[in-house]
Structures are given as C-alpha cells and as structure tokens.
Image (cartoon, rainbow, N blue to C red):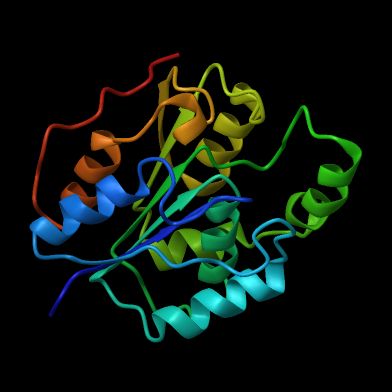
Length: 202
C-alpha cells in the first residue's frame, strides 16, 4: 500500500511557502504520495474548519499515513487525531514549531489563537493513535513559541521526541527552505532508516 504524507501549513501560510515544496518533492522522489493542501481561512484559522477539512481530505488513515504540521498546523494535526476512533492509527507524526503557548501576538492575533490555546486536547488518546511515534522540532530563538514550556508539554503529555535547533519559527521568512531532519523522521517512521537527528539533552 502506498505511503501517504500530509504536510499541513501554518497560519497565513501557503503550500508553496518555506520548506513544504522541498519536502513534498523529496517524498515523491522516494515513491511516497505527498500532499500539501491549502487549508481554509488562512488568516483566521478555526479549529472546526481545519479539523473538518483534514478529516475529509485524509479519509480513513492507517499505518501508512503520516502527518507533518507546521505551527498552527501542528495543533490542527493533534486535534484531528483526537477525533479518530481509538482502533485507528497512523504511521507517525512530525510537528515543526508546534505550540501550546504563544508569545508576541498582537490583540487581533490573540483573539484568533485563543480557542487553539484553550480548547483541551485528549493527550492520552493522541498517544494511543500515534503509537508514540511523535517527533517535534523546535527552536531556541523562535519569536512566537516559548521553548521550555512547549518542550515540556510535548515531552510530558505526548511522550514526544523533541529536537532543538536555532531556526526561528522554522519557516520561509527565517530562510528555511529545506528541512532534512523532517524527511529523516518520516523515513524512520516508515521503516527506511536515515541519518537520525541529534537529540537535545538539556
């Protein structure tokens, strides 16, 4: 069965931005089906519309289904996963610049972000559905995602492997147009070992 990867962009981003096209091309060259959907309401993302769109897009997930999120796309991925039946499962999840807490937002952004930050997540269910296959990439100089608090939640609540770099919000405006560590994580989850990321030991 074909391996499917869904790369979910962030708030006010497009599928053509940053490292998304690079990752999609690399995966297709390795015979994955790779999708970079344009999510609805780009500038005013809403939980129901993003999760509903993912549900429609993905259909029935399985162990050959992999999800990659960036920024608020990580929140969308997690919230989609918790809607699945516990008998369902996915092959692995890669979260880039994901968050449970944000900083440096203006008043309008705070209103949009509030439901994403305050609506509870079922961490235990997400862990079961992913089988613990969650890899997270964060930066220690991300202007929006405070490192220590978010790192702790990913590790304690989801049992995720967290890797720390210095790439800002890990996006196009930060000059990030390739993300080989994300590719390596997908290949590792799919049983194709590559160069493993270096673990953060702080």
